[in-house]
Length: 282
Image 1 (cartoon, rainbow, N blue to C red):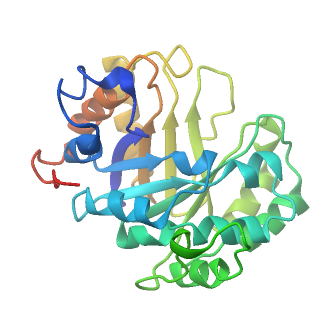
Image 2: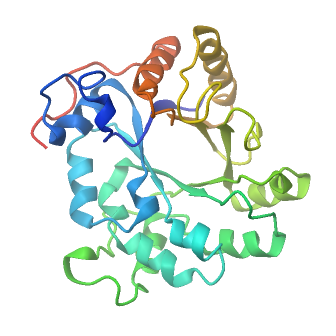
C-alpha cells in the first residue's frame, strides 16, 4: 500500500488569520502550525518566481521530520516558454534552492496553461529533460545562468534520492490513450484536478504517485467540500493507494475552507498527525 498525504496549496493567506490560524499567532509560525495538523503542503510561491535556498531551508526546518512538500514548477517554464527550450530555465529552477528541502522534497508539480494542447513531441522532450533523482537535479542545476549567483544558488544534493514529477494539464486533448501511455513511459503522474467542471479530471494512474488538487467542490477556489464529498475522496484515496503514493492538496483557499477540509479528510483517513510535533521557533 502506498502512503496517503493530505494538505493545502500554500499556507500564507491573510483571511485564514483569526480563523484557522489563532488570533495573535505570529506569521512566521504559520507554516509550523499548519504542518502540525497536516502531512504535506504544496509550495506554490515557486510557480511565480524563483525562491531562495535560505527560504527552502527555513521551510524544511519549520516542519516535522516526516513532513513532505510538493513544489510547483515555475510558470516561466510552463506558461511563458510553454515547455519549449527550457533546459536552462529548468537548471535555474533546480538551482534556486529546491534541493535544500532534502528528504522532505516530494513531487514536483508542473501545471500547464489552459490553452496548451497536447503535442506528443513537445511533451516527450520535456519529460526527457526532467531529472529523476536529486543527484541528477543537482547536475542539471550546475547549468544555471547568470540570473542566479551567490547565496541564491544551491547546486548540491545531500543524497541521491528519487525525484518524482506530476503534470496538471488543463486542455482536454491530454486525455487520450497516447498521452497517458507517454506519461507511463516516462513515469509522470497525472494530476487529478477537481475544478467544478472547468478543467478535465483525469482519474488515471500513470506512475507511482497520484497527485490530487481540489480547487473547490461547486465554486472554483472558494467552496468547501461537503461531508459526503469528503467521504468519497477518502474512498478514492484508499483505492489509489493500492498502487501508488497519494498526495492531496486543497486549493479552495479564497474563503478559508482549504485547511479545514484537509483536516477533515485526514480524519476520515485516520492519518491526522498529532498536534505539537512541529517546531515553533522557525
